[in-house]
Amino acid sequence: MDEIVKRALYDADAMSDLLDELEPFVFKVSFSLTRHQQDAEDLAQDVLYKICTKLSKFRGDSSLQTWVYSLLMNAYKDSLRKKKIRMTEPLPEHTPVSSFEAAADARMMLEEALRGLPETDRNILILRFQNDLSVREVAEIMNLSESNVKTRVFRIKDRLRGLFLQGGEVL
Image (cartoon, rainbow, N blue to C red):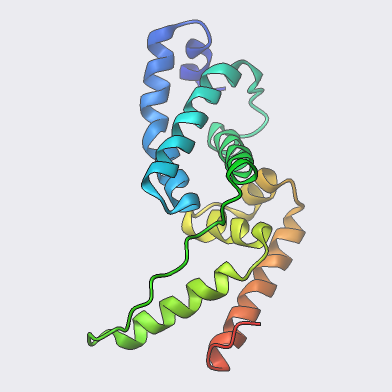
């Protein structure tokens, strides 16, 4: 277990240092999950509070980052249940007019396809690619086997590839 974690258990200054170190990371992940500034701030605050209150339960079996991701994912799922909100907000209607029209269309198509995925699959993609976690870390956070995560990622990528090759009809 990291020295700062051990000190944070009994020293308020060390706890403050730990929270200062984790806050940007917690907010970044919170925002990537919620896509709303206020929701991300609320989620981050909730998770930072949980870090304070549950740090004594951190056994060190996994990295501190993995443990914090687990807290984030659980808090996020709880907030979804409470608020009954979706993973991402609907995309605003707009017509790309710049030279990047094709890229904008592709991004919109991808976001639409991601909204159509089951929550677990979306979370796996967010953790794996947006937050750049290893398959093992994603498996730990999502309580899945590594082979299950690999299989899901392969199938999702295959589905998205097929979607783009067929011209964008979301199934």
